[in-house]
Length: 378
Figure 1 (cartoon, rainbow, N blue to C red):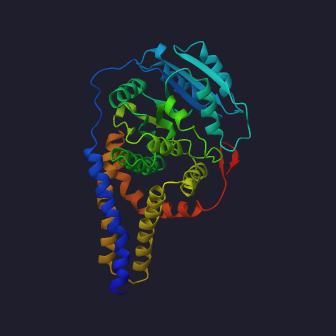
Figure 2: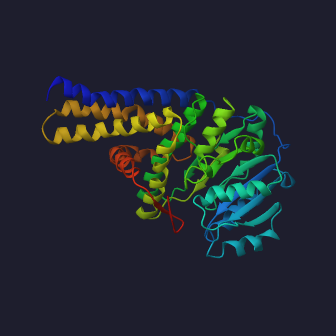
């Protein structure tokens, strides 16, 4: 193989090395938030859009009942998206036990193109308080979750706060692979916010000013896209309120959710996430998605070239070293913060399969439609 082809094969890994140096530097520089004092003045509306969460919803409502934040300073609205199980009945039964104000909101429209956005929009119309917090029905939160959010908002005066999310560690290979893969998204999103270039967030741990949501007209402009209840809204707020979108780096703000138990559910969620990139209006976000795809594709091409005898083992080792070295350090740091140090040993395995995963879903995102909560969505 010519020097030119070797140079082209190394170009992607070199850029990936530089990219991860940027991420690692940002992660180290981003301080862990330490509240100077407890703020209990913020009034909070916790919104939980749900569909068929009978197995999980009570555990979350009990977590919210154990919050250190004063019960009269927050309310909880469960927006039920036409559940076919006992979710609604369980929420109603819990209303008499809850220390906080608990409302069950039944959605008015079943066949909406973006049911989660519809649920959040209707819940915000019912919300009584100034600060909106969203999470999912299958999540778990710690007792100081709302307290640390309120303190951070008071300190930063942020319009939107993205919090850390991770999966429950079940001790299985399946769950730890997902923990590592998801840590890469959480960490890179956090660094982008630290550098005032937000690109990703997660609705399982997202909060914002109700006035900011109204100021950007909520989900208007992408209300017909099933995905993006978190990221599209974040981009609108970042454009309207520059420098006022923050990541809360404190493990007390952690939200845990369940890892996917089947490839089918994992497949449909990742396909749903991947489908968003074609709809971003900010060219920088689309360019980043293309860069990630190309950098990982170059690793696959390099492996293929080695198996075909076109490059030496030294060149392949150079490609993998550039691709994996700083990436490993970055992921290890994020996993330690997420209290998932046991998953650090699984990073090399995830690194080996990740290029195939990225390219598979990147190509799959060109198609339309996927399954979510038993529905076919576009």
